[in-house]
Image (cartoon, rainbow over the protein chains, first blue to last red):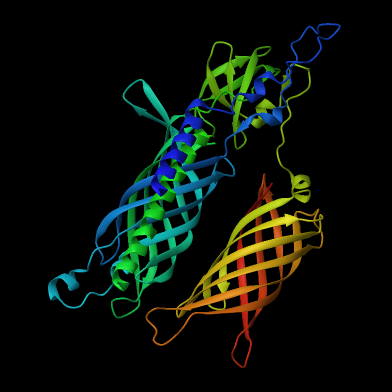
Length: 218
Length: 262
């Protein structure tokens, strides 16, 4: 029942999206206006410069690999939302999740498992500030250029892993490539740093993530 | 039976997340609907000797086309302080706001768009932001939304997560904030609020339980208007947590971060 409802909902929103319903409403605003007595020489536009489509937000999804120190390398998926403050700076909120594997110790010793299945799930969120360090054009072949930007990004967040929340610092480097003015492809490398005390003593762990994703500007 | 039911809940939880992601993606697809349709565009006449069009919205993208004085160009979209324009030959490129402000609209008026200045900041209604700092020795991450009642007074709803060595806390609070000089670029404020602190001791500690207590706080801070919709903010708050033990707990909090206004 639930999945049928979901299918219905998805069909509706997809249909709405594909037909672009509600996008062309602005066209026939002046339909029932009386014709003016004197036709002005210049065509009058009823549009205010403030109505120009502003696309400072970016939203999208990504997938890649996350290496959790001592707990293996696994697929990570996530979603990101960014706001471009100036041409140089942007802020980003992201959330992702992954699974982890048993440590080598657990496998080799055959001893009791350190974590339960649900504790092995890894999820995080973070809020970061990004800086477009190297904006420019990159050429693919001789005649095709794309707008790209190499950015530095870093911030704070939380990681839920091994049954607890852990304060996490992240920083990294990313490449944003725009095949179209409203569509971007990302490739990112991030380090998530947090303290973990599961293996007997408190230690700072570096957890490297590499992912690719797509985002839309709106 | 217990095992079965717990597995059932787990299964539903996981599906719920997957569903949420699918719905999110579908809604995004619907909202964006492929290429953004041509919405409102605005025509301007170039007044400078020329108008340089860049391939992208930023300093690093080269100029690839120049529109001449008297030429009519169509402004299509905006990203930060860059505008995408189209000339009659069909070429599309990006122009910085400063150049576009030296063009005229078809009514002969200079091109003028909202650029967000200090005055808009003073007149803001909504504000959202994120802060990071120290909550009694724990790292705290906080998001908040504020609604301006008058230029001086605003209501602020905040949700914070404090991540400490021995325990984690979620803090929800509602505060009333009074700005002393709301029209200044550097604007000090005082805040008074109440809320709930939910404390969850680390799983590695033994024989502890979650607890939830109400709390009140008072604080002071400073906002600094940076650019466009962007504001820097730093604050100090002192919390009194009304615990069920004999003594109330007092916690000091320092935070700094950024916010946006609408």
